[in-house]
Image (tube, rainbow, N blue to C red; front, side, top):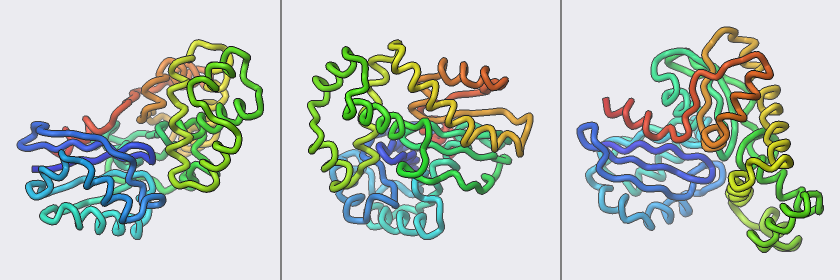
Length: 280
């Protein structure tokens, strides 16, 4: 029995399979080793009956997690999971590698993440090219769910949203200035808080104000991540993975067209392709 895990900073997706067939799955808060310590991750695991019931039977676990980009972080997360899955051999890689496998399998291509966070790299079919993009939600993550959340929240706090959006945002989230500042600067898992406003974009995707934010955010992503990578590796297929890319495929393809590019594939939930890859 194996388990495959794909985790952004907001949500971790689990699939458990036997002989190539899924027998259980679940979601839990993201297990980013940069933001979640051992105690927090073990608490998440111990709240999931699905994982508790299968913990002793799982022999291999393939984990792809945001924040697991260094050898130290990967070892840290592997050790933590090993305390819960005592009979499992655990292999941890970062979420960008998981995205690359999901989109390309064993072929080469440029892979972009637009999920709770964002990133991009060239994949040669076996390994990812190192880059300087992974700066997290404070310094980077252009185009991601937490980036979009930051923009809409700031616009609301400054009273810059169109009246109808300002009213609906206030009604939907019931936030005041002190609550927001306290939540961002004093409490943990800020990136999850910012990503929680992504639903507002889905609900109002046809509003001109929201469309303009998305257009600017995706353009920033292309200029910051994709175009520099493509300049080094021209002619390669372009793939996107993640909840933002998956939900705004038309807008993303339109942005690509503005830059004279065409997107080969967009995968909203990479966990399915990853399970297929490691089950076979």
